[in-house]
Image 1 (tube, helix red, strand yellow):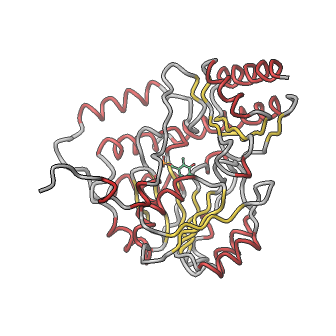
Image 2: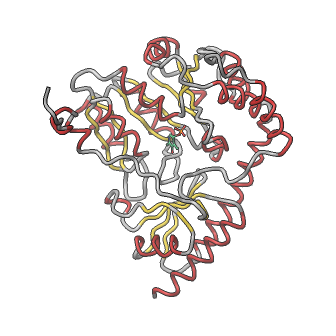
Length: 361
Ligand SMILES: *Cc1c(COP(=O)(O)O)cnc(C)c1O
C-alpha cells in the first residue's frame, strides 16, 4: 500500500478543474443575493409546524413515495391529473437525476448562456457534454442559433428556465415550443420563478411528448426545506424514479410542506407583495444615473452599472450582499443581480446604491 495518495491521480480531471459552487457568508448582512423570500410564515402556521416537529416519527424512514404530499402539491399547483410527479431534494437534485439517466457516452446537455449555473455544473458531474447557446444582447432567445445547435449537437436534454436566471426575463413561448418540437430528446422547462411570473407552460405537457416541467418551493418561501418537483408523462417519470434515491425527501420536509401548502394563500400573498416591490424597485433603479435596468418576471432584478465589481464591494462594505455577475459571461459585463427583499431592505439597497454611484462619479 502506498503511504500517500494523490487525489489528482484518482479523481476525474473535469472534477479537479471545477470550482465548488460558492456560497458567500452573509451573517449580519442584508441578504439580497439568493432569491430567497424575505418573509417568515405567520405565527399560527409556525405553531402548527412546531406541533408537527414534536410528533414526527423521526425514528422511521420517511414515506418513500411521499403520496400525501404529492396530493397537496397536485391541488396547490394545479398539476394535470394525467401527469406524474417526481419529488427532489430541491430542484437541483432533479436536474441531477435527469442528467444521470441520459448520460450515455458523448451525450449532450444543452442550455442557453447565461443561464442557471447548475445546468452546466451538473452536466459535468454526470459526465455529459455541455453546450450553452448564447442569448441575444437583450437576453432574448436566439431561436436560429438554438435550432442549428440542436441539429448539430442532438442534445439528449435541453434545460430552459422560464423565467430565466440570472436575467429575469421570460423567453418567447412560441420560440420555446418550436425548440420542443425540433428537439430530438427531452426538454425541461424550469419554472423556479413561476410565482412571480404570470404564465406557465404546464398546460403544454399534454401536447408535447418530450416536455418535462420543473418547479420548486424554494423561491416561494421554503428554501430551507429543500423541495422541488418534476411533472411529466409516466413514460419518463417511471425511468427517472429508478435513479431517485429512495428517501431523498425527509419526513420534516414532507410534513411541513404539506401543512404550508394548505395555506397557499399565505405564500401567494407574499409573492404578490414581492411583485409589487419589484415594480417599485425597478422604477427607483431606472431613474439612477449611469444604470441600465433589465425588466424582470422573477423575484430579482438584473442591472448594469459602470464599475460593477467596485459597486458590489462598496455595497458589501455597507452591509448589503447582492450577486456580482461581472466576469461570469461576456453578456453580463458590469452586471449585478439583486433579490427583491422587504420594503425596508429594498429602500436601504436603493439609497445605498445611489450614494455609492454619486460618490464614484
Ligand atoms: C434557484 C433555482 C433553482 C434551484 O432551486 P432548488 O429547488 O432550491 O434546488 C432551480 N432553477 C433555477 C433557474 C433557479 O434559479
